[in-house]
Length: 251
Image 1: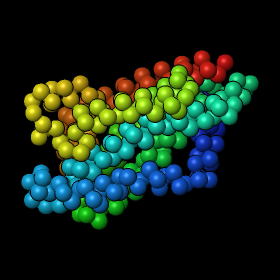
Image 2: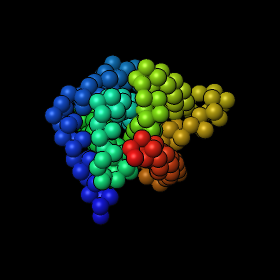
Image 3: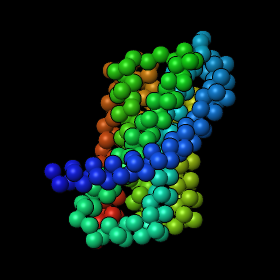
């Protein structure tokens, strides 16, 4: 019970800080909305689909995964600011669980990113996107696992490098191949065979395929459960590793 209470206290405090300055939620939505308005209309002729709804059914799930990946990977910058301000240092004298210090923050990030995903989905409905509510909730679960994994990784790396100058190029170096090899903007079915083979080793490509299957209403597609299983395992591993980094930094 103490661990749950500690996690809730950290989460509540982090959410309070976020809600005091909600502009960051809107900033996070801005880029995906620009893709939705300015890039997605190009997809119907490019993908040779018959309706705009089909094009958005392909594009919106990939964009939501992109939001979860990038939104999570860059959360470490806030932690570095807390390190510099002595917030993490002062945590040493508190009885709060070290794992709770991590989970409270990552859960805040998950809630923030899912809220942004809901906003983007509602906007996509204007463009005739249609998806079953149950499938949509399962897709949000996939996004939450991705956000949990990438956020935990970002915090762990931030504790290691302790510098924005090192974190920024490192995260960008990781994010670029992840983006290109996950079929976020265009399905990898249009890629040459060698590129599809390489992409199979990218766990995010499984998440994108699974999310697209949910949006098109194919709940029984193997990509859905494979994507959920892979992201869940990686999220647990990322949280365990990042928690160890917190334990080393706060003791």
